[in-house]
Amino acid sequence: MISENDIPVGFELLRENGITMIVRPDAAEAVRCFLSRPLPAQPAREYSGRGRLYRIDRGEDKPAILVKQYLRGGLFRGILKDKFLSALRFFSELYLTGIAAKQSVPTLKIAALAIKPAGLFKRAYLFTEELRGTSDLAEYCKARANATPTERRVVVNSVASEVRNMHNCGIFHADLHLKNILVKKDDPSKVYIIDFDNGDYISDMPDERRLENLMRLDRSAEKLNLQSPIITLTDRLRFLKAYCGGRKETHGRFKELVRAQVKWRRLHRAWWRIIGK
Image (cartoon, rainbow, N blue to C red):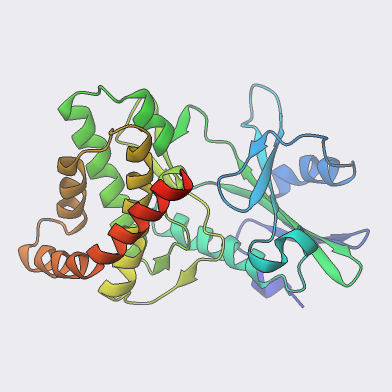
């Protein structure tokens, strides 16, 4: 059972009609209104992770709110769909996002978390403020395939810096891929890391876990390149160098770890080509 002591600063705990809400006071009315109605027939868009996004417009003077409906993955996805026994996963994303914000890792600003009863199960929704003028890194790369070397360097260095900062503050991202990194269209030096669903907090994160995240991100780049060769080897090497902060000993350590992963990368590449992804 969640208590007042578990609530992040700036939020309040509300229980109304069986629904538990951890909500910012300025967003409470919009959250109530959304939860009181049936879900729209179609989401604003399918989310790149496990979930659907709905959009709440709040006028020109306030950013819109995006609502992520949590969905299951794995073996039970087709059976339970949006139903969960435990709320731990939802709270985990709330707290990891809070840690990121406190440690100056650019990310989404959470407006609320709402949990609704569904018989013996629970349904959950995460409300975040929309980041205007951004696109995910995959779409940005496609749109800017002919970007100047300077622009490419700015984006690569910014992404590497924020991923390193995320790891340094103890956040392990469960699904670090290009669509979970947003880029400001008019200022590519500003990037945001989103979706800490199923992530973990690891104090003093070891190199092996860091590399696990980096290889996941690199696999995402490899998949994009199967569609069109956009992200170059130079971009990827520059990313690794920027992530290591220019320290030769760290760079060398990661290069050794990367070599150990090469055979698995070849298997992944062959599999993607077989299934057409």
